[in-house]
Length: 209
Image (cartoon, rainbow, N blue to C red; front, side):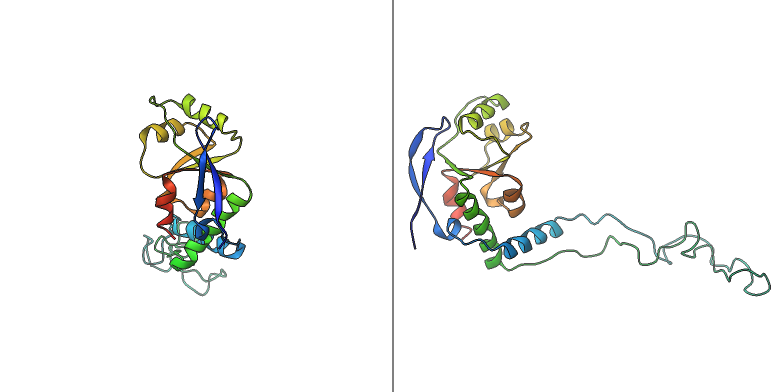
């Protein structure tokens, strides 16, 4: 398979050498159907099932028939808990025990992730950063780095391990998000146009292949 090489830059946009990317992650042909399935699965599995209505047995109220069935010249009527009356039980309403989870095998999930990563590389929306080094936790420091990297769109920064300085310096930037590469996912990759990966995070990412 053809080698995939990319230039590594430092936080001032200067050349810091080249690195070879794993073709299994960055050389995959786009499969839109597979990516869409992975996105639907992620949204479904992250869904919070809150809506809940009461059934006939759960609704409080008398079960006595409101008035006799015949001789009143009105439509027959059931108890106060009837679904057509105010505060009655709900017919076929949403329940919070409904299961919306979807599944997808591991091979397909990995391939979907590789498709999106490969698309980032092909569209030149992937930046491999040597390292980010500043001591103070300041939004200004991270904004200067992003400006030097000429990032003008929404950006996702993938790091190998927890880094309080980077994470807190990015937290107040509305168009940026820091994420451990272990948790790199389809939704965030599609939401953020530019992907910045720290050089040391590539080794961690390759373990997901």
